[in-house]
Length: 304
Image (cartoon, rainbow, N blue to C red; front, side, top):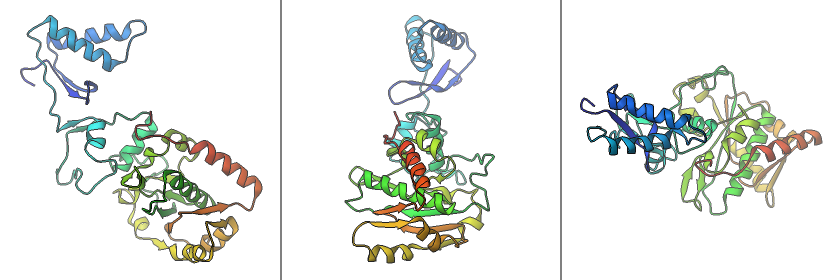
């Protein structure tokens, strides 16, 4: 940077306005004066468009303008790190800050829209440390529900969302927060996160605090008292599934009899594929059905 005026991050197709290193040189100052003029104009474009236009103008106007792109392996956009890097979900080979291994300097959480989706993605990748006023990670008293998605051809996106609805219903009845499984996309050939299937801003609005990302139990702030207190109840549902001739319908009262007295912090019910939960109380059934209808809306990875 000693000989440069500015060093922006490359954002896959343009220079990135969200992370940029700039020196207080005359031309560095002029760059931001140009950007300010553009953004303050009527019907002005966004700051990233203005940055790229201003860089182009300065390159043409002044041959001494010195710019270099930040290292593309160390400063990564959301598209470069998460998508092109094959990291839709966290992997063992990802960055380990404790060993300073495989770690870029910056990952810009862009190429995905809404604050909700950005926070969710960082949480999924264990890049989010904020515990919040609700002790999102660190609560020692909150109870959880774990379920799995089977990797079978008939587990389409629609079927996986029906399974998600069953899990949310069980979590609602048992007062347990649902820890999501990994989902499957592209005809069951690729593991993917919830934002590949569902609009995160919608599910956050209607099920706030009632679910967690699939990597939740791996987060360093989750207490050992939670991660070590797991009860496997998959066999109980398997018995009912074996007795059912087709899809399993299970009533709320039956669920409460089976699992309501379990005190384990984490209850693992295994696969909920082709399981449907019914409510004995009609008004509760109607209200929860509306919440599901409004909260579960299809979306793609980038949430556009």
